[in-house]
Length: 261
Length: 217
Image 1 (cartoon, each protein chain N blue to C red):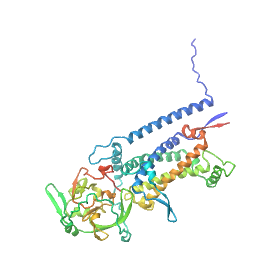
Image 2: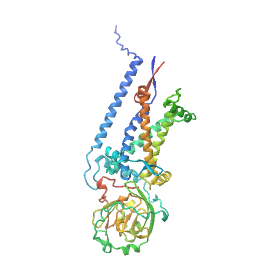
Image 3: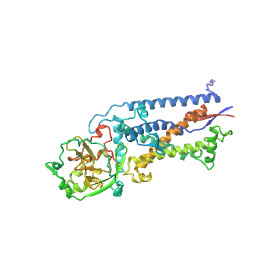
Image 4: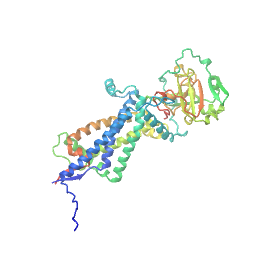
């Protein structure tokens, strides 16, 4: 005869059940809570990215910024326009927020030239008289600073897309990025081509119907409503085209390279 | 005899507790961003009553000069805040849990009775199902606020690409004010919520972790 070895499962009293379920739940709760806290500590002290085109952010956060950029670039369209306003709404006292790249006191507007490399050999040098010949576009839009303020402003100049057409830079415009730099090379921005070619992107020489004042980037500055103010370079000296991301002043200080609106 | 009665499903508990640190991170990184243009005040008859935020507050929490870092954190954790919220709302809808959450036609009147009771003005205690009337109103409001934060946040984040969303929020400038106000709302909710949880006692708190409450029968 076989002896019966049947394990009888003990029936738990309600008290025991309560204890058991509470114990398991709170144990899980504290283990997961601890893991979450540990991950947070790790992220907070994660190593900084290797300085390059971008710098100043921690490695994982920079990766996240770049991935998030890829997602939101799907929303981008030349049909999506920044809202425009009647001219009366434009501020007369236009906010000045920085002078990096335009600090040179000996700068002479009359000797200013815009330099652009066309093809491999040709260097275009363009003066203001040339630029004023091109069709002029005015825009009154809400300028947005990365700091969080915004102001309705009125700018006038030549659309970047019209400029490209006039100077036969279509081949260059087929590349992925545009870089712009101040004459003293102290401030520089990189723009993805689709944002640069947006119909509201302007090389501006007028503010409120008057020539741009020195502190606002005379004689020629960038106005790009699909980007934060940090990309709206004052006093453009050179424009270049490339398939790699050009250097960008604020992307080297931990800011998102794309900074698109 | 004591019996175990299930109260909160696992997914509700999970999303609730995940949301807590996520919201804390979103508020903290939001403060880092807000600091760069900290212009909001509450002004009554020309006198600023509250300034957001006083210097001692910024110093205490080490807020100043961290805009880039704040943005990097904010635009990373926004994904998790959004997905966790979506999971909660989706589950609440499909599981039928919304029945015990959404206010019904009596809730707004009854919620007032709950408030009076909690302030010890009214003696008789109002009916308490899984949630009482005041909880229904408050918890539904906080879900709507969360949705509002996502919408106003997107309106500020991509005001050109999502121009219709920005328009819906009353423009860029107003959307930022709304986004900020909702955050202040969370903080106020949090304070009241924690006080209420402490008053409600252990059995109630355990239900949010272990899922069940104990009833005498």
